[in-house]
Amino acid sequence: MSEHGPKIISSGQTGVGRGALDAALDTGTPCGGYCPQGRRAEDGDIPGHYPLTESGSADYEDSMRDNVTGSDGTLIIHFGGMRGDAELAERFCRAHSKPHLAIDGKQLDIEKAEQQLFDFLRKYSIHILHVAGARRSEHAGAYDYTHKLLVRLLRR
Image (cartoon, rainbow, N blue to C red; front, top):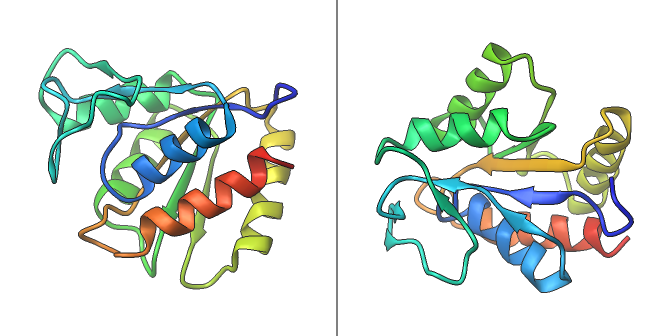
């Protein structure tokens, strides 16, 4: 980790992805990542203020793989089960032998999640953290949980 925490990368998808990018932007932490070609997301186009690079295809799996392989480790935030983007991120982490930490936001309060994440970052010397997980359509509180967690960590 750098003195300002790890660089945060995400695909910019609704929910966890945007919560992570906004936490980085709000704390002055470097951020970025790969998004699908055309900056597509479940709510339309990903807003231009997110500093994302379009992957070579419109296939969401390609940008997820690029973010997993372009990071030192992945934080996966889900709410009651690994499905959708959380499951995809975990599959790519395993396939590429990348460290990952899965946090169930239904089971873990922010303070405990922050400590687990801090320990994970130190254990694996994470300088670039990929953050993935539930979309807004899967859990309405995904954005808020992720944003609060990462702001606490990045201001630590």
